[in-house]
Amino acid sequence: MLSERAEQILREVVRLHTRTGEPVGSRSLVALDCFNLSSATLRNVMADLEEDGFLSQPHTSAGRQPTDRGYRYFVDYLADDCELTREEQRTIARSMLRLAGETREMMRGTSLLLSRFSNLVGIVLGPDKEQVLFHQMEFILLAPSRVLVVMVSPSGVVNNRIVEVKEEYEQEELDRFSRFLTDEYSGWSLASVRDHIAARLNEESVRCNRLMNNALSLGRLFFAGLGEDAEIFLEGTTNMLRTPEFAEHGSIHALLEAIEQKSKLVALLNSCLDTDLKDVSIVIGSESRMDDFGACSVVSSPISLEDRVIGSVGVLGPKRMEYQRMIGLVGSIASQFNSLIGRTASLRGRG
Picture 1 (cartoon, helix red, strand yellow):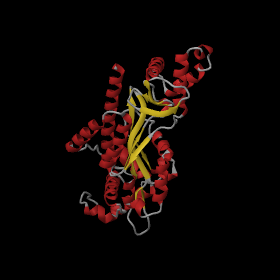
Picture 2 (cartoon, helix red, strand yellow; picture 1 turned 90 degrees about the vertical axis):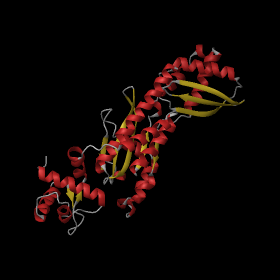
Picture 3 (tube, helix red, strand yellow; picture 1 turned 45 degrees about the horizontal axis):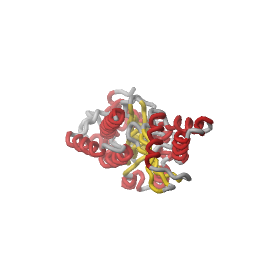
């Protein structure tokens, strides 16, 4: 642990650097009029903080700025709790209520809300599709050889795709297939449903039962086109272009490419999920162990349903971000998101 004096100086260096984006010198600290210390003493303490890895100096004549270790110490020990204003809380609550409904649209809208209030990149990570629970499946006849398959999870996540069929069906038949699969597999994971359907179609008894065989065959067509990766929604990528750390350097191109690949973002957010369900997790710079995001920080919180993590919400931005505010924002939106999907699941369970 640092001394009280060193902590106070580190706190103000982080705050000033966050606000200005410039290295902080001893004169800037003296101007704050909150230290009863000389400029020379401040320089000595800052030099000690640099030697211990909490601050760095871009070049000899410059002031100092926080390192990843400095930001981590600030977040863990020095950052004050930051409550959103009542007006912000009301606006977020109203916006989240308007998003209530189909879960995928709620995820998309939530990423936009996160970006809007943070001026960073807002991200919502859904569950791996194989881990989504099966609640209901419906078959809707579109044409003699085309059927729309709709799969709904307890939390309201909807997956659908059009499948081509060789046999002609009536809608009444498709309704029976829907009821059969829903009765058989409601509450199972999609991975378990997929594997069980494949195994049952090899059974002689199933091949002899037209209803079972056709229902399972249609189900298999749906799963054959269902990807396994988690869905990810992000808004506000262009906000990074307005951030001096990236706008002035070629690193923005590599960062935008990593964001667009999305699989790297999924890996980054998944690394944040090893946390208590109610906690906000923060990954700073090199802690991600991913070179593409070495100049960034992520503040995220889990999305959970019945004590099971099914995704996360968060913001991605430069290490020089307002951590107190982002913790309050992400925590508030995650809490309301969890309440909405819990309510959706409850209503579907009673239905």
